[in-house]
Length: 76
Image 1: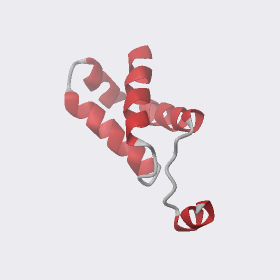
Image 2: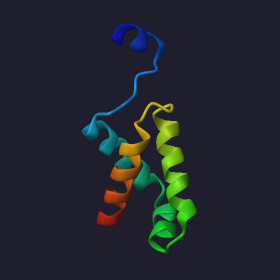
Image 3: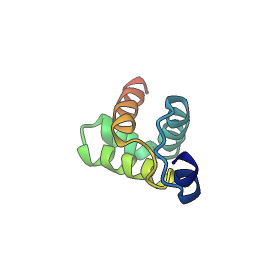
Image 4: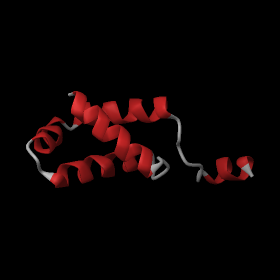
């Protein structure tokens, strides 16, 4: 089953370290959205999640992405 998932590229990314690297990169490249999030604009987090999903071609675990993104944004 894993071989088939790999070939069709539909395997979900659940590796925390891999997701953190991607999220850090998105945060660094979207500073305006980070500022908007810090100023209470809810749309900013949705935009950042969208960028992460775009970067991972929709393979990132959305629950993990949401939790990691909020955690990392609060550290900035």
